[in-house]
Image (cartoon, rainbow over all chains, first blue to last red; front, side, top):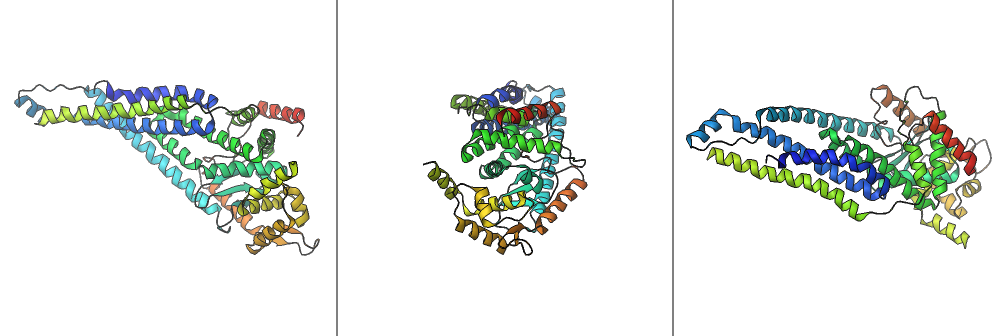
Length: 298
Length: 127
C-alpha cells in the first residue's frame, strides 16, 4: 500500500513525457487511441488512489484505534495524516474540475444542436452564411459537417473535397468521443494536460491522413490546410478570435509533406502497459487497505 | 486508365457525400451554376444525370433554388437556413465562453511568421 498507492501518480508524470514522442513517430490513428486509453486508465487510477488515501484517514478515527488497541493489535498506519488530508483536498478539487468539464461539454453540445436547426436531418453539410472562414464536425446521429460560406469560397474544388473528407473522418472515427474522454481524464488528473493536447492534435493529423488517402494526394491535402489557415488569418474577426499559436497547422502541413508515419505496435503496447500498470497498482493498494481496515475492525 | 480511376472515385462517393459536394460548390461561387458547370467543378467522372438527380433532391429539401431571373436551368443556394445557423453561431459567442472554440476546428490561427512560411509554400509549390 505504502508504495502501490503512489504509482498512478508516477505514471501521470511519465505519460506526458512520452506522449510528444509517440505523437511524432507513430501513425496518428494508433497514437490517439493508445494515448487516450492510457490517459483514461491513469486518471481513473489516480482518482481512486486519492479516494484510498482519504479512506485511510478512517484508520485514525478514534473508535477504530480504540478497538484496535483493545484487541491488543497495534495499528500500523501506512498513510501519514498529512497526506490523507492533502488527498482529501485534492479529491475535492478533482470533483470540481470534472464537474466543470462536464458542464462545458453539455454547453457545447447544446450550442451545436442549435446550429443544425432549420437544416433537413438527412443532409450532411450544414452551411452557415458567415464572413468568418470556419469548419468543424458536429458529432451525433447523424453527424454533420458545418462549414461557413467564407471557408467554401476560399478553397478550390479539390481542396473543398479535402475539407469534407477531413471532417467526415472525424465523424466516422468518433473523434469527438476520444477528445471528450481525454478531456475528462485531464480534468480529473491535471498532470495529464499535455496528453490531452497531444490527442487533440493527433485526431487532426488522423483526419488529415484519411483525407489524403481519400483524395489520393498528400500535396492537395497540405495545400487545402494552408489555404484554409491563410484565409482564417486574413478575416477580421473581433468577436471570435482564437489565439492559437501552437504551430498546429504548420506541423500538420509539414507532416503531410513526408510519408505517413508507421504503426508502431510495440510502442503502442508499452503505452497501454503504462496505463494498465497504474490501474493494477491502484487495485493492489485497494486490497491492502481493505485488509488493513478489516484487521483493525475485527 | 486515369479516366476510369477518377470515375471509380466519383462512384465510390455515397449519395449523401455527393449532395454535400454539390451544395459546397454552389456556395463557393457568387453566381448561379448550371448542372453542366457543377459537373465540371466536381469532376471525378460524375455523370450529368447524377448531378441532375442530386440537384433535384437538394431542391426538394429547400436547400437550393432555381435561378428565376438568370439563366435557365441554373441553381443557387437557399440562404434561409444558412443565415439562421450564422445567427446561432453569433448568439453562442455573445452568450459567454465560446462553445465552438472548444471544438476541433479544421484549422487553427496562425502566427505572423507561420503565415509568412505558408505563403512561401504557395509561392514555391505552385498553388
